Length: 151
Image (tube, rainbow, N blue to C red; front, top):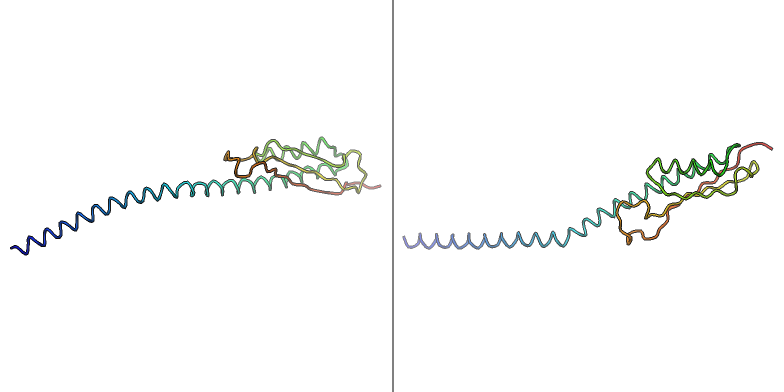
């Protein structure tokens, strides 16, 4: 009978040690999560912002193409090209763009190259207000086409 009691007390002690071990592991998991979670969430937000930046860059490229296409037509003017580019960008949720057309399409001769640049500060289109991420970066796109017409 003595041997039996010894075995029971030995088993009981091992179970107690295991229970304490599990409790400390739960605390360890909490500490590990607290250390890793901010880095993980910064990585996720950075990925979202990079995706947004690439999307905005593509919108600016397409807006410049649409605007310069309007400018090179025979009836094209700086105002119509600017409106076309701005409307395209705003239709794709990119507001506050700046449009520069050179030279003035209404005075350009047929065959002249017309350039249109669309730009926007990244701070205007970011979804995460983090000035340290892209800082004062300005996204821009330029398209160049030849003025239509015959001389």
